[in-house]
Image (cartoon, rainbow, N blue to C red; front, side):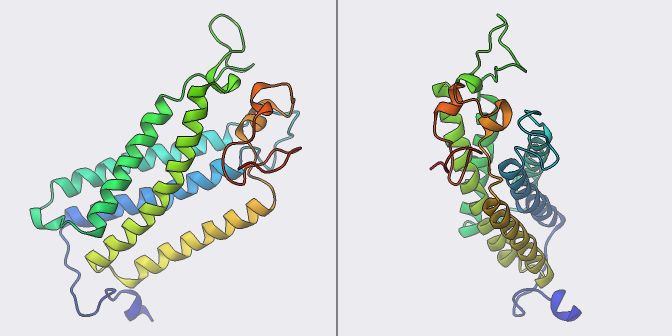
Length: 239
């Protein structure tokens, strides 16, 4: 068993990599294979923390801080991995499925970070506007905020799917040992199982309601939740 685990995926090919390719792979797998999907699961299902006395206690920052730490750390790892592959010997980056998938993921990652920076103001009781009002792009659900949520959520799921394909194609191209893809598949399977269980428990709560409560008079609570399977505690699932 141990011999098989440490053997390359394709026994007919060798597994000879320079240090740049090896660390490129490690950085990308750590970022996109581990941190990004974990950050997505936390952001989707822990808007209201299990220990939170919601709606008496609103706006838990657990999911927000964890999501940011995971995704920004992954972004830094992605930049490191990108720098390593761009400075590797020319034959190391051969155009093919992994090459195209990798660049698609890099572009989507950059778009996600830029979109997050441009998402607008928060507003509401915890972050009022300079004039003292509650106005803010998020609190008022302005067109800017609506665009951010639709783009950020949809591109995020697309990026994580493409990144899985990029990682697996990269492992095959590098002829990595069997334990690598097996470990990743176990990790991803665990996340998918957690996703299904938490979704069935109704923990994918709308961000707006989690932050500002269920008052139906609030601007965001008068709209349908944004995202597939997103619910409100007193309403039906969104699109």
